[in-house]
Length: 119
Image (cartoon, rainbow, N blue to C red; front, side, top):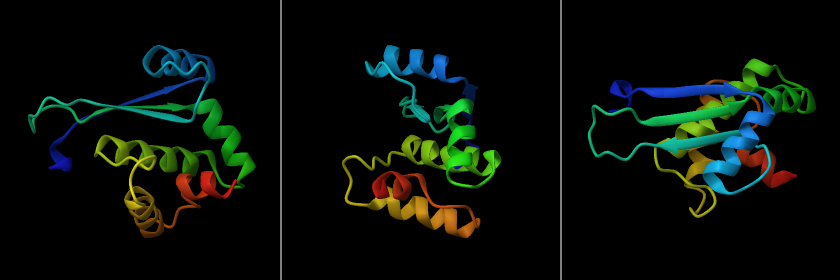
């Protein structure tokens, strides 16, 4: 059950995010959010880690005219869905639908997947 699982949240700058992205994914650029699930098979284990770039979140919030806090929540939701096993790069829209459902329930701005798709 998700309510019983720990999640590590790391907030860093773009330079640190670039290092993490390069070291763990082989992509030498910064990004907005990364998720690192732990797959130990035990419900008592932490679910994993979410890393969010504060620089990216602040600049995107200005670009999309909402608060940095809203952008952090959007990025956290996106990262959490990845920890739960969703993958918008290979699924048939399930992650997008779940992200939109959560965002609508909390009255948040446009979802990360929708924004990326519409650019």
